[in-house]
Image (cartoon, rainbow, N blue to C red):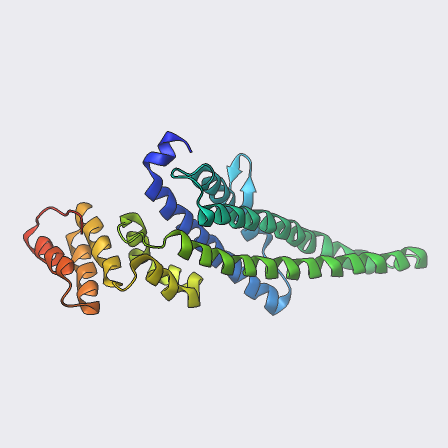
Length: 256
């Protein structure tokens, strides 16, 4: 791991989780489209994958995961290595899906055009074989989408393992607080498990840590909203009450 990544480790960890959620959200929209009409948007998939000189979201995510999880400090981290594996696999499966979408979107219509031109019988018979190949491509797309959906489920669980007991992780708390709709949408039934893994029996700690981060960023109104959410969960939490005092007095934020 490079010194720069090591110094900014928590920010990298937050970014990896956020990028996974953003990529999964876009891909799941494509899966719904595939289920509805058998089509995918090549442009969307191309944007997620990108190219060597202009990497897309999933390519950058794969690279971040390699930098972050390979050669981790503190020795062997199974959850980190498994995340590195699944995030890399998601990129390569999406790359294959992108290629299939390109073939379906641009090559498929050409077959219909050929058939409409009144091909000689020998060529028409061969065209039927090309139709079979197109059907196989469509089936490949469905299989790849199913593999990706399964990978998303496993990756969510690996994130729960990776962030277990990391209640003092303020960049993570900010992500969970600020982008709760995104996290809920992607993690679905695993969202409560993620919160429980990080914060145990103190779910209000999420909003306390986020509130401290917001106060440090000179955003007192948002910090007040965060501490209000914490106090709605547990009105007696001493750390939340102290943060509320700091927000009202404009005092410095410190460790929760």
